[in-house]
Image 1: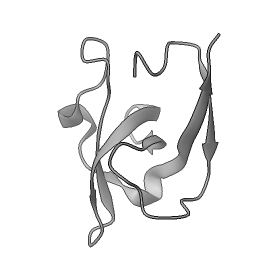
Image 2: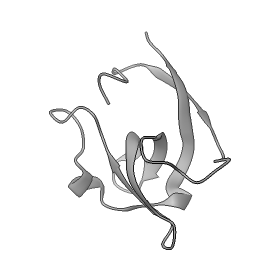
Image 3: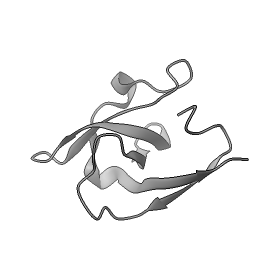
Length: 85
């Protein structure tokens, strides 16, 4: 997620969405293969309750194809701020 996040940075998130996820929101989600990941929302399908997500660091990030579609219930929180170390 560089330049937004660097390795070792901490994030602070809201566990519950007050509204539906919006394009551009940064979320923490639990992926079955990769564990906890931080990505940006690129699409939200309200009917299926699924998200398409992408990272900002294309050279060192999991691609959207690797992640696949993420179920809304896998989202742990929406990132509201980060702390640089």
